Image 1 (tube, rainbow, N blue to C red):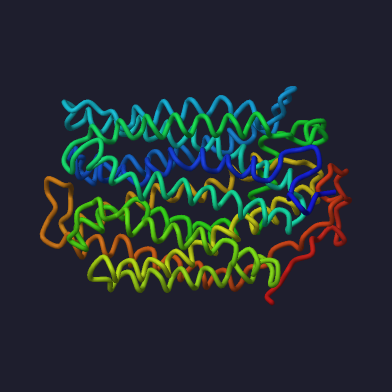
Image 2 (image 1 turned 135 degrees about the vertical axis):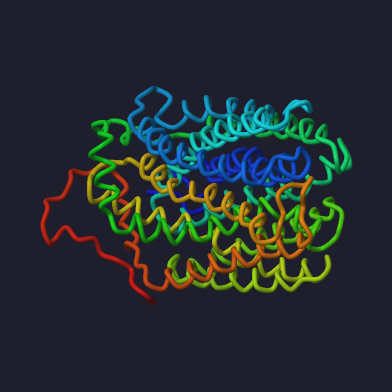
Length: 463
């Protein structure tokens, strides 16, 4: 039974303490994804073709190690729980790798620069996956009812947006004006150290306060191959995963390219990305309460579909922006759609996890979320290919060889590609059904039901 006033299980983690963990997990990876192109390609001169190859390789590696990390988490049995040990180990490792990522020696060129970038990009993504698989697995466990889950998710997405204000909107100002310059790298290293210390403190605070359900850890440890086979045979894994990837890849393109969009497409100093990103994030934060109320009235599925459409409209408007003011106006629409996706996407995934636990009698949220992470790994492949395409179509190969159509190149990267992806997601979402919200007892371990026609899960169809 949950406490509707706090959205938490009595005697367990309050919703706010769980939610603040999203602040710590978001700062490092958001700085990495938001600044890697500017740092490595535009300032250090890494060729976009090398960048694209590395992104494909690291996405493949990450797609393999993600399910393994989730499975190990599900099988962990300790007096500290299943998730907390991984959170406490992964946090300092991610911070250390992030600092190294933004500390590339100035003397590195050619293959040496590519190797440094590849090693620390892969390590950062691996430890980020370790953190988020375990952190995300706590949501359906601590908050089994969708109303309470929506509150906790809304709070954590609010903390994520606060982290994004700092790690994305403020970062260009810190790296290029406060601690460094437009053409130097010193500011990135200093900023990474500051963000790393803050992130580590927050994650440890959240993890030490997390109170996992001990009944989930007393079950028989799930087997890897059998569990994976069960997941990949689940049609909802593919439909929800691929549709959600349309949103995830679109936002990955935006976060990685907005600083260069400001520099080349709008013709402004990179520091102005503070205002564009800040407005988008603030609108998203303000919209979370509105979208959460819509979820309560119309359901997660209906709201998810609407958010896809709003986000697509925002990208279309952003393409036609000619200056900072018009870009901010379009960015407000992007922020509104993004807010809706933040409020609903994890709820759709959690419904799939609920159905899996009810159907199979095993709580393997870590493995299931990590398997969904396979679709998130497509982000790296697509962003790498998208950046490489700018060299093919517009002649942008690096900051040293930008070509003659750089402004249009980054309009395509930041607006056209995300628009196409979100339109595809909006269309696909219209054909998706998800399981209905289970009763509270469905969150407790149960024996697997007998196979047969009666075993078919109820689904929530179009409203």
